[in-house]
Amino acid sequence: MLEEIKKTAAFIQAETRDFAPEVGIVLGTGLGDFADRIDTQFAIEYKNIPGFPVSTVEGHKGRMIFGTIEGRRVVAMQGRFHYYEGYTMQQVTFPVRVMQQLGIKYLFVSNASGGINTSFRVGDLMVITDHINLMPNPLIGPNIAELGPRFPDMHNCYDKTLIAAATKIAEEENIKLQYGVYVGGTGPTFETQAEYRYFKAIGGDAAGMSTVPEVIVARHMSVPVFGVSVITNCGLSDEVGDHEDVQRQGKKAGVRMEVLFRKMIKNLK
Image (cartoon, rainbow, N blue to C red; front, side, top):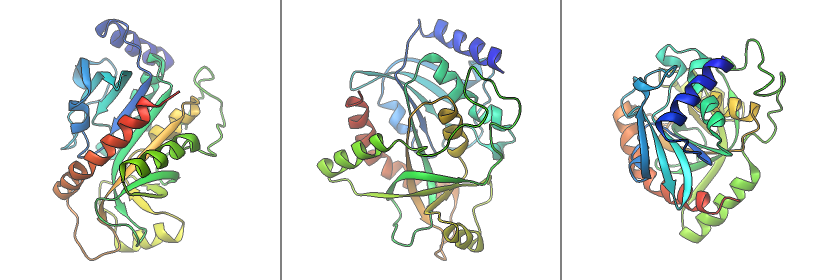
């Protein structure tokens, strides 16, 4: 796998004239519009990148965007890959491996999720403070020592310094933030109410079908992570969710998330 990662990174470096991003950004369902407002220098379709899967989910455009935000070099994934699409966990997390080879020092992740915490409302931004993984672990299999240790520590997966920076910016910009634990499941079914009650009982505040595998491999490679969930539905209510509504709510909340990400990226050390 390491050889394939390096081969893909070399292809991208050639296509982008050795553009060296400082920050990697993964944009979830309904949040892809943020990438359109990056000062873009290069854009590559996933289908043209060797070794990359192709995003099959509506709301995931399927491009890597290379450019700047507030003068800082970034690479953004406009759409991600999911285990429920039939990809292996190694395929799902392959782009994060490649971004690390390209030079990222931080990873920002976002997703649309169902609210479990009863104090949450549709449209809230939840800063992820921890996660519970209910998917196959992407590190199962032979370990590649050059990427990280066999048994990586998952304490403080979500960087406390970055969370503190987000809190300060949110106060300055009058952006309401929630904080909580993200439960990552396989999907593609939306969760039953019994499952939501189970997630609540084990300590979850929001649930979704992504993010956790990417965070695990980032931490395996010692890349600090900041994560945000957009609460697009309340799982313990009687409302019936659908993918179109998830996209709509994601787009609305994405405006506030963009302000947060922009200011955080600008102030990175």
